[in-house]
Length: 581
Ligand SMILES: Nc1ncnc2c1ncn2[C@@H]1O[C@H](COP(=O)(O)OP(=O)(O)O)[C@@H](O)[C@H]1O
Ligand SMILES: [Mg+2]
Image (cartoon, rainbow, N blue to C red; front, side, top):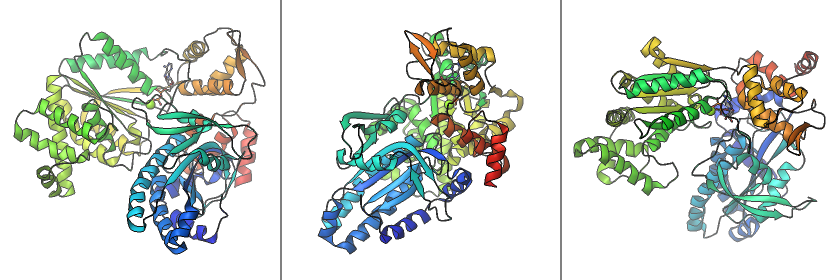
């Protein structure tokens, strides 16, 4: 690793000063956790063979290439609300998870890494053209504990890595081919359901007594798995019978030609997505041949700043393909869908260019002319009417269920458009299923409020609350599959998880990880000191992300509480709060 120079400081100031305002605000809100141990995903980007290149082009030219490169790379980090922790000559170190924390930081880290490599590909071509040199990077990630200090007004902070987490990210780079992404086993364990990775085996790393297993990230999985749940364990859905029955009823109404809206709300982990999955399975099982079509648009946790993100996802679902299949395949599918529903050329031409533009397809000149001459407002109106036409046509042929997942993360432009589509419910067999956490100040909640205003009591509202104690017990028994679990352990799981199915799974995961329960001859037995357990990383992320939305005073208390643990003596809390203020 290079020695830090004053030049690095100048660069770093320039980059951190460019951090977007919402990120700065979150860093400020996380201030109270400075000095606490947090789990962060550390991203290390470095330029391959930079010393030789710098000698070739001279220090000054090299400095200007790096300034430009850093400026671009920082954007990819900020896009996913990571922060830039340090620059070291030709290397950039970014953190996802500290000081700003989300429930999916390792995923964000890898997404940023994929974007970084893409940016670097473009930059490489430009640098080759302008300077005749090869500019290539490698990106490596590791996940582990760090302690960050207070964040200054221009987003600078100090940090202390624990157990060499930052060093390891830097050291595995020697096993990385240029323009690839390498991750440690720690990071892999968080992200493997979502990204295609290849196991590169064990590598020797300086200062580490044991070899380290590394993986190369190949890209997004075409069928990403769930980040929830315990590998190897699954409980059938417990409870929720009434809710499932009411969803199935709604389906029948829509199949009879009526339009409907259902809102499913509940805290993270309460089982909103699981209920939808069970509902889908139940209706598919009932239908000999499909009598309604199912489309689904999903918002992403970092999607609020991506215009029309949710609508684009919905359009891909209409085309029955996944994003990431490549422009030509997607473009083909888009034309195919429209040709199927719009036989009149004029009707086709009223839709194809506009939504084709929204989907970022390479349009022919004629289509481009149509779109580019419009002002943004007119363009938006065209998007809306085009989408309305498609949904009308499609639902005429077959009633439609439109699932809008994780609306609490939806982007405002998609929501504006969806609000304009709501009146369609009065005349078309469409069932809008709106799924959200109760977060009243999000754009997504606006859609729910508008639907309520519009349809009043005709909306079906499903609130998913905590499971009853009997239900939680049933879930624990299903997951651990034996009745012989010590009652003390069972009680602890129930108490810690508070009827939240996700918490039930996470508490069990943590007990297994920490060896507090283990399988002996097929039976679960308590081992070690079961009382001294820590909140698992996933749960901590979820709790803190949730706490970020509360008013300041409550936030302050809860943050401290969350760090101490969900169960803690009030005295400890008082002491800590007293110590901070
Ligand atoms: N009623 C239930 N019975 C059994 N497992 C459940 C139940 N509800 C949720 N789960 C499990 O708990 C985890 C969290 O549920 P999920 O649907 O992802 O929550 P949400 O979408 O509300 O955040 C998932 O692994 C899910 O399979
Ligand atoms: Mg969900």
